[in-house]
Image (cartoon, rainbow over all chains, first blue to last red):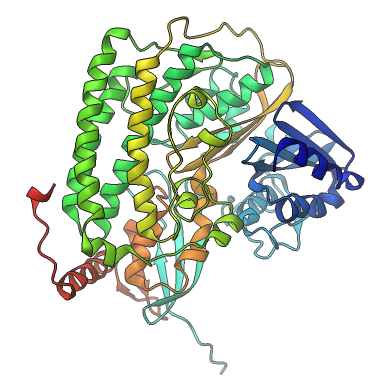
Length: 146
Length: 405
């Protein structure tokens, strides 16, 4: 898939996105709301056959973000899905592990460190935190870091 | 009274005194066959992503070079790639070449280390001794260039900290010739050995489909016919200027992963030599005053696979978020695909084939349903070696002699 194909194919999913941003020649960010993350990631992985790299959780004060990084190795593009979770009280997002087992660990890690509930995860247990770590304390949240 | 059937469990881990990673694998076994696998990690979580947000941009490379002792060139480089992307700067050409040289020397010594340990696990201690002996001069070269055998601390935002003096280049080239010659002997001995073929072929297969699903990278992916390599696919540093090829093998078994690593050593030697010969003149670093706000993704091909760093800046002097993806973190879960259905005697080498920083394999113990240890690590290692000896006898192979190398 060359660059033009990639841009054309990405526009197919536009209805699920807030916007598409391009920071440099080969870094593309797809911004979406939390409820669309499953559909957008499934499209990138299954329909466009991009390679899953990793996911990143971010606490941005008023909301949470989960970033899913995908790589198109043929054109050197990194396509990042940026899902915004607006509900700070009960943050939750759909798991992408059912079709992408390579994401199982990182989703467990995000739940551990940010307290973002990963819905429908096939094997949700703690990954990073110790068994005796208190419930409800999430090490990478802003209020804990302060 | 309710009677529950307890399946025998094979516990691998959790601690290994040799290396800094600790992992615990729990294998459910039916006789000799592994039927399920469960993993626990994070016994030694150091919170590097959290610490990184308390350091300034130019201090972070020293922190991330300590993520892994062996990948201590590729982690800082991936981070630098991300920060340079945010700042929109490109390091001087000479610095790009120096980055390649250090990263490729790192790959050579890491792959030799793996070959040695792989040999050790199946009872070929001669391979272990020789591979590590050949690895030593590579570490000496790194010490000569950077001042350290590991944790080189040579890369910085905008370039490199230390230059490679031109007068050292002939000596380095000479040493590399020697390393190449010896590695060639070792490679031929390993690849021509009928016992290794019998012992490693068809063992621990990771299919191409599973390699894609589990998103593995590095030799683990390339051994399964997924020819991806960040150096080739998204060239950073000076990789785009050099002449080399991506090595891949079709079958996905332990043997193919070994072949990939052995052949990659030669590509790395070739690349290092070319980079040394072409090393451009000029400055090695730019002065970088501040990092603007923004976000960047940097990646680099570490010996074990893709190292990926995501950095977000708010225009201050520290990253507000720094995500690190180490290759083993993603490669390790692929054990579910490669170990289930294998026998216990093959698990040691199948786990090792991913090159997961070995933390796990030293403390293998088989326990029965009453949690009494019936096989300890030594027993399992002995079982693995006995299988090698059995194959040896069956195919009537001669004893491996020192002179063969």
